[in-house]
Length: 145
Image 1 (tube, rainbow, N blue to C red):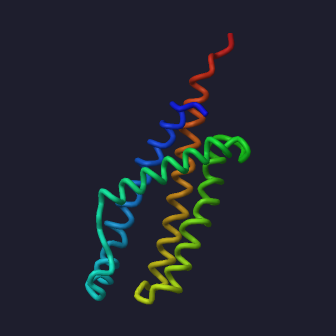
Image 2: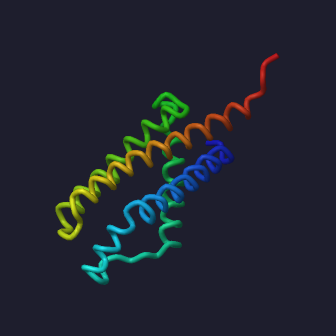
Image 3: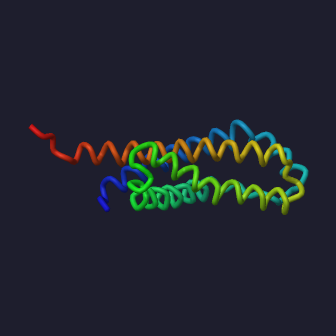
């Protein structure tokens, strides 16, 4: 594993993930979560630094997976997109099913909206990982004369 390409891909995924999560959870569905919180005080915690650290852990794990399986998935952005779709099934889709059937105060429409967002976000994160890792790989290989 090339450490520089790994760090570059992880940093790109982290930045995209933090930006997308903030946009979605704060700006798009933030009001819905605030309404649920007001109806069920104490049910949610909002610890932004912890979310950002969790996003960093995800980015490191995702980039590591990409480094290990990216070539088997075809390499480049398309491999990152495929990996993003695989990861979203294991994380967001399964998690949403557990939430929907286990947390009665979460409306189904909010869960579905979140899953759709997660599919888009994981595809974008995968594309970024693939693009950065591949671009850095291409720039590391000397041009033939």
